[in-house]
Image (cartoon, rainbow, N blue to C red; front, side, top):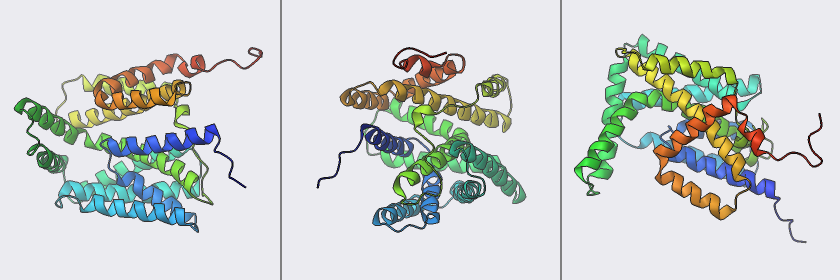
Amino acid sequence: MTAAPALPAERRVTRGLFGALVAFLFLPFPPLFLLGPLAGLLLLGRPGTAREWLWIVAAMALATMATAVGARSVAQEVVLAAAALFTGIFLAMILVRPGSAFVRAALAALATAAAVAAGCAAVGLGWDAIHQALQSQLLDAMSLVVDQSGLPEASVAELREMMTWMARAYPGLAALGAMGGGSLAVALAARIARRPIVPSPGPLAGFRFNDHLVWGAVVALGLFLLPLRDPWADLVLNLVVIWAGLYAARGWAIVLTAARRWPSGLAVALFLGAVLLLPYVLSGLLILGLADTWIDIRRVLSPPPPGGVVS
C-alpha cells in the first residue's frame, strides 16, 4: 500500500515552519535563543526516534559553532549567559505552567533581561563596555566580508553605520530573538517530537496580542523623541525596536493569512522580492500591524461561512 499524500493544511504548516526557521536565521537574532530551547524541549520529551536525535544533534552542533565563531569578548560572554538563562527559564515556565508559548517566551525574555542587568551591575560591567565590545565585534565581522567584496566606499560607510546602529539596538534584537526563538522552538518540537511535552502554539497567521498594548508603543515612541542622554537614549531605542518588531510580526501574520489564496509561485517570488527590499517591507509590515489594532484585517480577509453569517 502507498502512503496517503499529505493534506494541504499539513503541507502549509510544514512550509510555514520551514519559512519561519529560515527567516529567524536570516534576521540578526542570536541563534542560541532558538537552538537552546529546541534541543531542551526535544530532550525533555524523551526522544526515541532517529528524527528527534538528528534535530537534537543538529541544534547542538549549530549552537557549538555559534559560540566558537569569533574571538571571545565581553559582549559574547554576556550573550552566552543570556542565552543559557533564557533557555533554563523558558523551559521551567513551560514545564511548571504550560500555556501560550509566546507569553512564556516574553516573560522568560523579561526575566532574563533583569537577571543579566543585575549580574552585570554586580560585577561592575556597564553598558558602555558592552556596547563598545558589540560594536567592535560587528564591525570586525563586517570587515571580513566587505574587505574582499570590492564595494564602493559609500556602500561600506552605510554598512558601518548600520553595524554601529545594530550595536546600540542589539539588546532589543536579542529580546525579539528570544520571544520568536522560544515560540518557534515550541512549534518545531511539537512537529518533530513523537511525544511533545507541549502542544503546537498554532500557525503564525493567527499571531496577535492585546490591542491595548499599543499604548506601550506610543509611550516608547514619545520617549524616543525626547533629547535623552545615554544610556537612557539607548534603553528607549531598544524598547522602540521591540515594539516595532512585535507589530511587524503582527503585520507578517496578516500577510500570511492573505497568502493562503496565492499560488505557490507567486508567494515564493514575493518572498524573494521582500528579502531584496527588506527595509521597505519591514516598514510596510509595521504599518499593517499597527493598523490591525483598530481594524481586524484578518476578519476582512476571511471569507464568510457558507450560507451567510449567523447572528
